[in-house]
Amino acid sequence: MSRPEVVVHRDGDLLAAATAARLVTRLVDAQAARGSASLVLTGGRTGTAVLEQLRAAPARDAVDWSRVDLYWGDERFLPAGHEDRNETQARAALLDHVPVDPDRVHAMEPSDGRFGDDPDAAADAYADVLAAASRPEDHGSVPSFDVCLLGVGEEGHTASIFPGSPAVYERDRSVVAVRNCPKPPPTRVSLTLPALRQATEVWLMTTGGAKAAAVAMALTGAGEVQLPAAGALGKRRTLWLLDSTAAAKVPELFTPPLA
Ligand SMILES: O=C1O[C@H](COP(=O)(O)O)[C@@H](O)[C@H](O)[C@H]1O
Image (cartoon, rainbow, N blue to C red; front, side, top):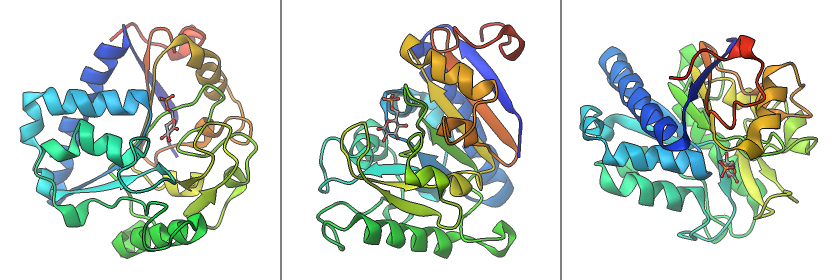
């Protein structure tokens, strides 16, 4: 696993624009090397702002969107098209505006989908999607995603893995149903920490002073049960992409000059 690196941008707009540019480069490189790229999307304000910046960036056309496999790190378990679903927000921010291949957009099941109101069945079905996409070189049932985008909650959750919740202890399954979440909606589906750790690169992105304590704790040795974001590590790279207010409590040792 990689050691976390920190990049601090002056403000949230700059963070979103710079992360969008970084993503274009990473996806183009992956496609040049392998013919396709895989990307895990996140919900939340910062993740959505990055997708909006990507939509607005002319360089987005350097990516062959028809050869990008898209997944989600977590989903709010709500009816299809609900405005609070991470899928709905990602489609509005980017996916409806670029020529993705619908067969390569791997959304999690909604609460009115094939399995009805059963988040465990939705989680199992998504685990099957991941297993079907993994190759022998992935050494398991989760693909080595090129980039896994994640947000960070004020209390340190990432994807829908909340501090001290059953999901944070999960070691065997790649996807779980999550109930009684402290942040609405209460029912969600989430990749687990072992699944997130299959990504080649994990990018944790967050902004705002309300996140400063969680960010500092995650970077200075907090355990993943207390602070799940601390357990999200990429195989080759773990990047914390922050604005200056989210980075305010991170010891100087971790923070290079403003980017
Ligand atoms: O509910 C969620 O929140 C987190 C963080 O969101 P933010 O708005 O504080 O950036 C996000 O990572 C997760 O995907 C989402 O379901």
